Length: 401
Ligand SMILES: Nc1ncnc2c1ncn2[C@@H]1O[C@H](COP(=O)(O)OP(=O)(O)O)[C@@H](O)[C@H]1O
Ligand SMILES: [Mg+2]
Image (cartoon, rainbow, N blue to C red):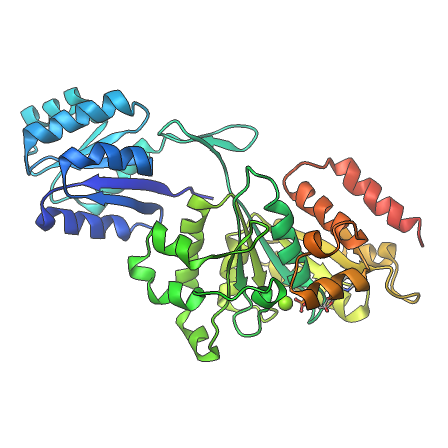
């Protein structure tokens, strides 16, 4: 998935800064990290906001602007500068490039030229272990986006989503957000006993002027470290949330969170589909009963019709061992035609107790069977457990039967 480029601009003139700002805000893959109207303050702004690219408009004061570019190049050598000026003559271009600018665009800036320049400046290198060396020299991980969807009501998808999120958030290197996309009946906030100030409805209402500060403030942080963006409180606000909003929000959230978890509805709404399309993995939570398995088969068939979606589906079998008469794992795998990726044992006491206490398992029942399995799931998704561990886990459950 395409990474967001974080940009900071400096232009003392409102008349030229505004159109440039609007142009940048219209680009999906761009996050406007900071805006500054004084050349002399910009070096501090750039140091604090650490963007991927800085845009310096020259025309308010060429001498000051060129001096700033020189200073930026010396003090922040990995941060490329894009210079903008209405004077596109050879002399002006040469001066900007000599000062250290990597790209030069003539004002008024044309979208196509801006996109091409941004593309050239996109020097992020993704290494084999998934870390990204950004153009400013900082190293961060590619974010992992996971959707959780259930094969029927009450199958345990919210339980998997919130506990997965909380478990992932235990690694200090992670910054994890859960977005409740069960827009009508979601209960991630209740399950974590959170009283949010903002919901997805506020984000949707402010989509045109969404910035990093607003988006971060809209998420509610749980004591365990997980950030949550709940579904709208008022049912009538659901209509405010369009799938194209979600696309933008996901793109932006990826710039500040290492892991995004979506708790989806079971209605295959356009927002559910957008989330699944933008995910790296889709956990399809089912149980060993006929309705679940039949729906898994139907869902896999539907997903199979869209390129790239079926390969992301990982079936998570929940409440394994709950019933003497349940369908066997072997039979389930034969029926759905693909291996079960993970199993979560039946653990009524821990799961229901945690839910009623409004706490994640790691706080309510840290040593419960369900929690140990969900820690394993978090590790497996991060590539911390080998495939062999997954296989062994599966075999150990077979041996129960
Ligand atoms: N592994 C499990 N063992 C026992 N009970 C579970 C398990 N997973 C979920 N539950 C229970 O099932 C109910 C529904 O779970 P929930 O996560 O809300 O499902 P969904 O989001 O799919 O509707 C909850 O009461 C929960 O405590
Ligand atoms: Mg749910």
